[in-house]
Image 1 (cartoon, rainbow, N blue to C red):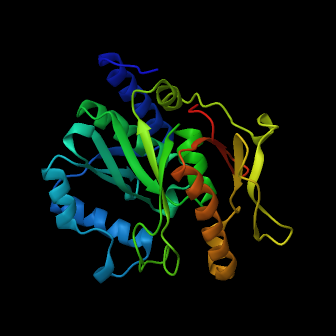
Image 2: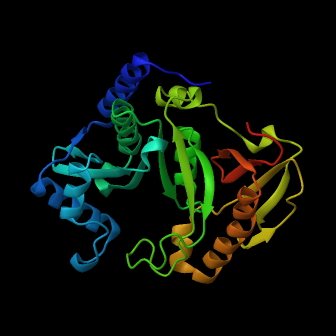
Image 3: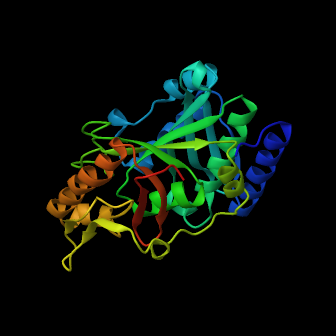
Length: 288
């Protein structure tokens, strides 16, 4: 079901304002080269790169803004604490692609990630967009739960090696497979999620599901059955720590998720949701 009209924009602004107040930070669009330079520095600090390898530059951020794109910042008592940026896709798609969101460690636990997404949603709706897309690492459990469970986004594609080799402290030496998330801004599930109404999906609610990927007693990936109507795909609890401590095991998980989740999505399966204990719930027979 789609919700439309001026009431949708008004409600989106109310939800965004409530999330901003709850976070304790102030969010606004960033303009001018000085603010964009500060945003570049923050992103560089979050991704832990040197000045010659920053993910974005100040002049690029200025170009995004002057062309009508989205660059926002969240401020606390100490100054700029988080940044979010996006640019538009083909005009006919009425789609904003959210490329980077970064927040300093001091914002942890504030809910600023959700507040930034709701600010971006309200802005995009005012600009006439219907959808926001972004990519995320499908092996990071908290991101999968946030995107699918908290925001009610859907996954519309699996993109192997999307960014190639990335020379930053977060992605270095890892394969950059990504899931492509789509957020239909007027869909009833997204409207409900924006106001904080998100039903919890649990694997126990699918007793006839088959397990396509799980961990053995040593934490290694084990391929299973992908032939059921509903398939469960497990991911590790902390792939980032595993990547640092045991890169071989981390790489094995990456390839196993590509083989299972990536293959299922390529065959037209739909991710129904994500159990916060680490399971993708995948429907092979119908679109939820």
